[in-house]
Length: 258
Length: 254
Ligand SMILES: Nc1ncnc2c1ncn2[C@@H]1O[C@H](COP(=O)(O)OP(=O)(O)OP(=O)(O)O)[C@@H](O)[C@H]1O
Ligand SMILES: [Mg+2]
Image (cartoon, rainbow over all chains, first blue to last red; front, side, top):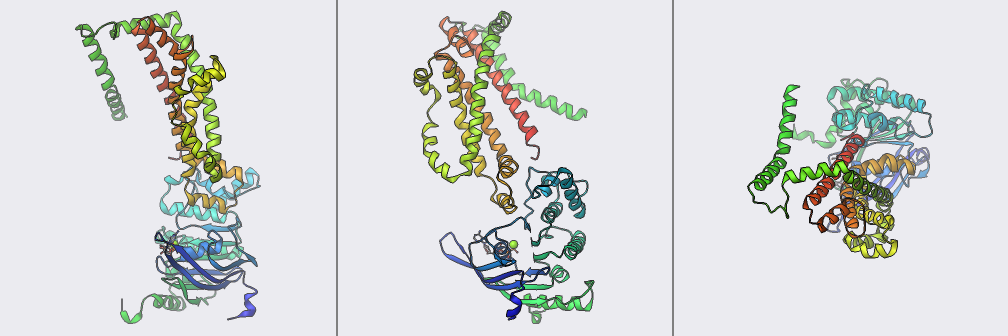
């Protein structure tokens, strides 16, 4: 639509199609003609029902899966693989079981002195509220704690882009809200561009500048909803609820009642 | 505290049941004249032989020789098995190249190698060490390859997406992930090495536990044979326990 703005897009996804070859060697189309751009420092949330291809889309954009047609560019360069300056929080925590929390968080850091590394790691461990668990192994953590360690690991290298696949899925409502706040604070402070997949409409409205609503089978962009809320986002404010309703109605027809 | 101590005693008692039963049956059969002393000596006779072999130093000497041989061959097998296993496990190319060869050589029992080994190395130490090496090498190699293969692709993806330098990837990701399999290989490899040292010493040796056993057989000293066998069993078990201990220390995350 806005061709002059395309130039400014920090991340650009154009004509993305993705198939998986199934066991019976039949093609299953997962993503169909995905097009959108993300500006530097923007937060995009992707919502959609389970199995609609959100994780697949995120993997294609961050370069973990390059077997697709169409192009993805980040900062003007075509994405051909992952890069350690782009952070990734996976849907499963994916911590290395043989490393402690501190070692997991520090794994990505390179070329720092021991002391610098220790300080950085400690900072992000404290940030996600895992102080005191530095020497624990992942099996000794609860699901939510492991996920927070995974978030610390993605943040520690100060990525310019952060990809998060349902990062707060395993958290209780209270921890979730405080983690969302924390993530928002970090994002504001460092102007990180963020793509976040979620099931949680509230979370999307709270965090996003724009929300991409996906339809399923095949996954397509049904609608992109801008969240034009300035300043502090009060989850109970009229404007907040209004946007939540828009997203909600994309999934559940109002006339059905509840 | 006392509860767990009682539990431990219970475990140990349970553990010993079979061994004690066998010894009791053995004693009873010996004292009721059901054993032909030439074929199967009584436990008392075996006990006396242990004492005299220990006192004369004969047992220690032969034990030391065999242990040294095993350690040499085993170390060689472990180092080569682990290094080559990692390389083959990582490279599909190397794997294709070596798979058939490994599968062909692996089932050949080390004893079948003895004639060739004697021709190649003579009857000196190096031939025996080579046989012991052969015994442990393939077991270790195959376990290491398997371990590397089984690395969780999702975790490999994490390490790769962080553009981890090769050596760091190997030492902090690949090897720890394969560690349980590597230890399995090291432990089964060790017992294969013991089997080979005895085989080697049976054929061409004037020292070692295998020689002790073979020599005793020629003079009909079944008591010495049994003492030799027991010694191998016990030392094998001790070495295995040490490896288990090392495994527990290394794999702390499980
Ligand atoms: N490696 C694969 N091979 C074949 N099919 C796959 C593969 N990965 C995903 N799929 C299929 O692609 C579809 C989308 O999967 P994806 O993981 O992207 O869903 P999702 O939107 O992230 O779902 P959820 O919210 O449950 O995580 C699913 O139908 C799944 O069966
Ligand atoms: Mg998913």
